[in-house]
Image 1 (cartoon, rainbow, N blue to C red):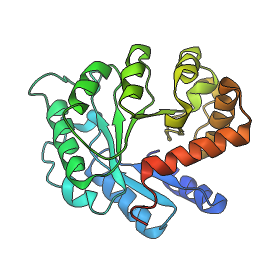
Image 2 (tube, one colour; image 1 turned 30 degrees about the vertical axis):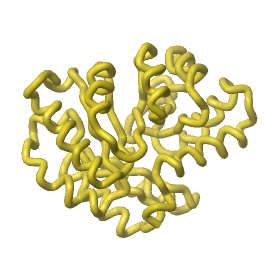
Image 3 (cartoon, rainbow, N blue to C red; image 1 turned 180 degrees about the vertical axis):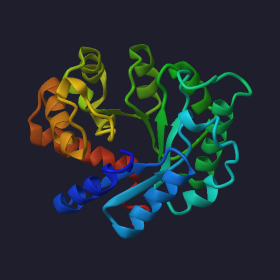
Length: 238
């Protein structure tokens, strides 16, 4: 999720009250600083990921803040490519930022949270040049990209859109349960679900995965929780 007001207060409060872990991604320098501050205020509850989202690549071409901030974070994200925002070709701000950030993550060996909408093949090509920590392809939609993603051992996450999207349900059936995570992608509001949003939707995603995989809800929750800990390297940084 992203800690954008008013989601900042309500999301953190829910996580504290439920003893959940909240993974919060920055989208630029300001929001990355915000999630790091939230982590300091709620240690063990907020896991900060810092990075420049593809939507912001044209607005911030000085990325010298990335590497120092990674020392304060649990991972890099949300980073990647998306042609709906700006060009992604050779020499583009998006591609330069993506490569720069992956190089920083490679040195830090931290988990990486990747955005690939509309650029899945290009994202996979770029990722093949780097050796980072565990990698998550967030909200993957391209069915033809799934085999390569799983072959490389990348994690795939599903949002509450899984509850109504037949395409995402097909993807989930083909996914390796051992490489599957659940997410809220807050503050995204889901119109088919009455525009609700937030971490409280995550259990419903796990329940839907249980139905798709033919297992009990408790098994799906346990499995995806274990996957999340492996992705986050929860034991490696305390």
